[in-house]
Length: 310
Image (tube, rainbow, N blue to C red; front, top):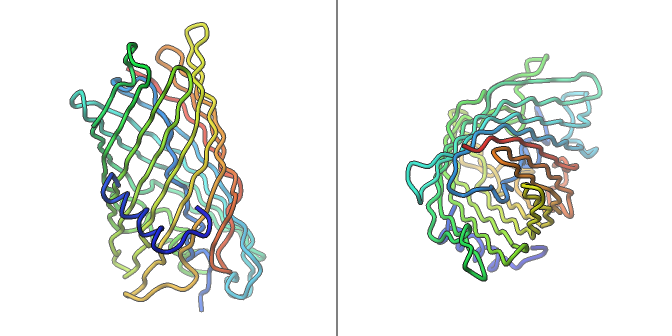
């Protein structure tokens, strides 16, 4: 979605609404906490899942006057996310998701290294199946259309300080200190072994007690896959593209400088489903990063997960 006119960007956001869901640190920008909303295709639609996944990314800070902590230049931020999650079915057409993250954030500066860790913000989501012919054997094309949304709880720490007792920037914190609401849409179409999956989501965030409000965000991902069945296994190599747009943050009701922007990624992954076991791995390589000058730039993201189907 490079260089889209403003009216088209607004139309995209509207579509998601209708269908889904000087202590200067440049990490107050949107870049540092970006983890994306790329989820992909989950197996055996009508079955419960319990799983664990791990995500890793790093951000490089440009050399600008805003990328200093006092006299200490900020070089890189590293983010690790360990997440327990589950998918449950209270009824045939409703699926519930719960995500409980544990996060480790490390910042490398010229004069110090800072690391914080802890339980992050817990997320609860629900999807409703408007269409589901994914398991049908007598159709030429199989479709699954899920519409849903959810909320995130402010369970993570968000007022951590470095060794000099300087407050760490909002985007480097483990939590946000505020509730958020999201809407989402997931559509999959498959013909024989070939398929296409599309995800749309939009997130609204409340203000925390420090009068800081993270900007609303929109995410879109499209991926093609090929379903291979062999020796009782299902293997899905997939290739796709994702786009993330972040509105500027607000502090005391005023726009926070050096926040907001958008990014595009090339996504490459493979899924493996064998009996009750589901494995997934994917990487996201940045294609473009349209960010304010002082924002840190994202490096390669990668994610691996294992889930049990029951």
